Length: 257
Ligand SMILES: Cc1cc2nc3c(=O)[nH]c(=O)nc-3n(C[C@H](O)[C@H](O)[C@H](O)COP(=O)(O)OP(=O)(O)OC[C@H]3O[C@@H](n4cnc5c(N)ncnc54)[C@H](O)[C@@H]3O)c2cc1C
Image 1 (cartoon, rainbow, N blue to C red):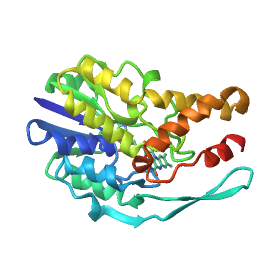
Image 2: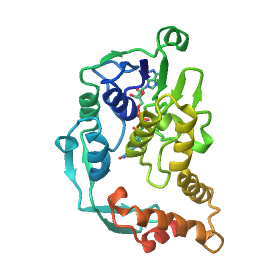
Image 3: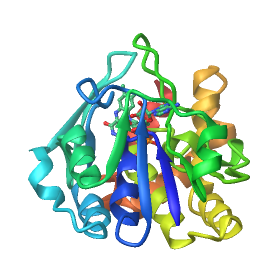
């Protein structure tokens, strides 16, 4: 298939690396090659990145900058606490993006028009993330269930463009790559891709409800304890995936802040 990947960030570059063996893939990135960068804190989890990168024959370890031991949290009420880490690291994010795009044709400094891509390609992947102005640098707080449709005509959305960000942590690197992985697994079957994305990210909407009520100042521990406990249970079960020790007492501190 001839595939256009629009947006060479985490998801787009990963897709180039995963699809290049079996398909003709061409990337488009609106930044210039010189200014191509990635607004982010570059924090991620080693074990999951090792697993995802190995599927693209890429050695993640060589991009690791700092292997963390403790995370220091300071909240808006000035309360501070430490979280012990289990694999949370920082890495050279743009270095990995370039490593993944290596050997592929990528056009920089261009935001291609859909009508032009439609004429040339069998499939167009929207991996454009979220438009970030230089000030504010927001992330998308709209989980996949709120970002449908994921596909229309020849276009399929992957990554933060369809809301794959964990609302409690603002973590979008691994979720975007997992989304790309689901896309590759279901290539050619958009409906199954949609179902798998909704299924995998279902918990994200529950977490978003908690975050929204906190942001509106409407969170009630008495009324929403079960909701909070479900978030805790999910994160505790996936401690290694989140790269940190998860304790209910820490979530309670966040809930009460
Ligand atoms: C300040 C900040 C800190 C963050 N820190 C972390 C962190 O530490 N850990 C973590 O896991 N997540 C973090 N995130 C979230 C994470 O960076 C994103 O969720 C993740 O990069 C999304 O990946 P993506 O590939 O979907 O989109 P992106 O990585 O945003 O890539 C999208 C690409 O598409 C390009 N593009 C956009 N529109 C067009 C167009 N029309 N044509 C061509 N190209 C286009 C963009 O220039 C960009 O290169 C942070 C986000 C912000 C804003």
